[in-house]
Length: 441
Length: 148
Image (cartoon, rainbow over the protein chains, first blue to last red):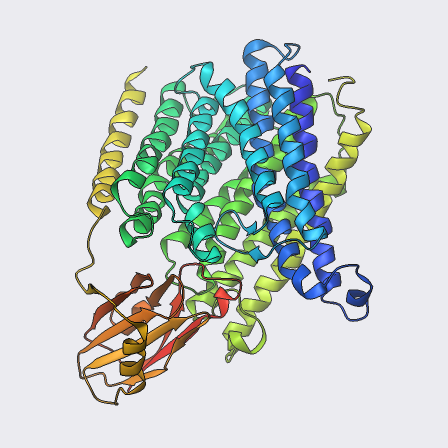
């Protein structure tokens, strides 16, 4: 398989992961709908949480990691040429595909029990864990290929280094955790350190996506090489101690837990601010006119949504809806960057034709404004004490302002889902029409 | 590298050092308001919790999947020592910032009793939550502290 074909396969996997997440979202709705729930061939009550785990793992974990694979192979192709053959890429893709099967089966076959722990929700069943291992291992192979090019200071190489640190944390947690822990505690602590480091990976991916899109559309590096290097190195330096902490503090203790939350608090703002200021300066400069209108709008939406999430993150406390407001806006900003990255950089690179029209353009506005409304509604509700992950009477919506805030959240959510579905349907159709992976690319 | 880039990198380095200093200072920063002691038997703690009387300075709160028990009602003009233990697995006690002017967030592990000083309480009803995943109904683990 050539590196270009590999890039196309990662693209199919990542957008396909969103499609799978969408199917599971529908199944979740069915599992709670009277009459239809009785037709489903598995126990609807146990399916709800398992379906939710599968939905989250595909819409967040697999989508982000497969997009990382697409970006690494795109970057690798720029260095070695798209026609270069890569055995590593083929093995990695096979492992990740196998992993995806392992992640789906437990929900469909009613195997194990569901845990909605932070970062990597799981099903307590060997098939699911085998799926996770295959997924992580597949991308680890590509990460090692990326690191072995030794282009230190380059975003993709540092991103690969960060990913390997995250895996190292998970491996250390596995070796340090007592095996007799209760499953919720075990799973939460297993992915606590690695999950936090993965947020550094996601930040690196966002900055890389912005850089690729701007470079492809205008030929401009919105961060000069030294500044870009400093930005990525900062991410790496703050995440570097993550794996050593396992040897210093009790893996079940408060110091261990707080280290990772503080690592995010102090390690992520500065690189995010540098990249955001760089992009803002570019978008306000005459050079921005070299980009087409949609790309400019998509970058603005991504920049605003991501930074709104960062701002909400500075003001969160405890267990109210300000917490999901923060991460929904941040993830929304990253997703918008990935959407325009696929449409403007990756799909043209793998020779998938794009037909643009009003519907195509509107997906960005639906998704961007929907996410801003959704997150802002949650933030306003959280300021008034509305608890997160609650429904009905538990929310205690006893004032007009609380009802309006949650209404804004609901309306924004629906609009964002419409935009997300449009992206998946439109993009997946184009990829399928673009022929088989071994054709064209 | 041009002069402008050099100045930018110096500014970034100053900010990075400030963030790094704060980060390093936060590592293993023992919380002065929390003390922990080994818990020999949970039944002993449960007994104290069930027999606690309104107005006494020691309060007992049990964390369990998925509730904080009992609901505590206290006075704003008095200082308290809040004792917390878990009846089952790991939880994390979180009291919202409005109660004392700063939030409290303490990881609660089985086999230990956690003693937290409650001072300068303001009147009101304050949310108690669990901030560490503790099972599929973790989101329902809520309680309240009523300060009269």
